[in-house]
Image 1 (cartoon, rainbow over the protein chains, first blue to last red):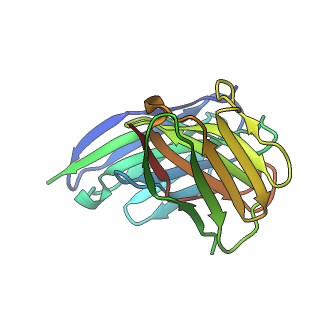
Image 2: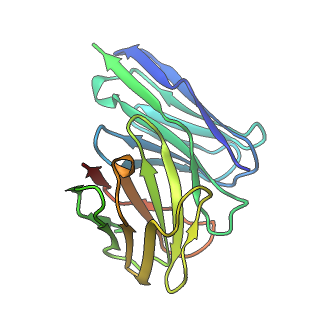
Image 3: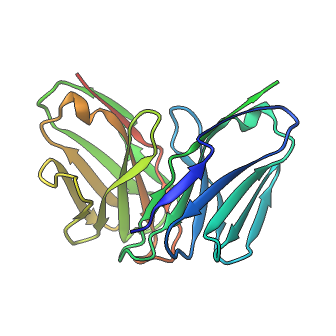
Length: 113
Length: 117
């Protein structure tokens, strides 16, 4: 059974600082997703990581995937207040027949001035 | 492209009534749609997977007689919460994929917030 664990669950950081959110998954998965969710809103797709060693960057966010370690990271560089949101990672359920996603519990990020 | 809509965006109903939520893929055909539920401050939990023209597959612990799913066309899936109770109050989010199977990105709808009084 595929399980996805994120840490930390809560992250309070100052503007300008760097930090990393970690996402571990328990069994083989060939696709890893990162999403952002603002309060009261649905999910906004950030990154899709398809292979070992994949690295994608968009603005102050960079995501990477290590399939051997079953680990994905979301690195935040020089955080700004606008990045405050909840970030979810999700892994494609490789063992499932219909391609459903298994989500981590989310990391609530609060960036303070 | 790849826009998914949900209707209604929010609904308040009395306990014991039924509520229907629609999920539409606006600019693509979705052979598979997924229904998730999210309680406050929690993650998304998959409720069921629906494929066009066939019965939905429900996750363990989800009552199929209470949460009726109909995927009648390639652009529409509906979730009906029957005899709703306050504990069914939640944020319901659907997603859709263009083709069946595991190698496809899912596109998420904006969600429907349900409050049962």
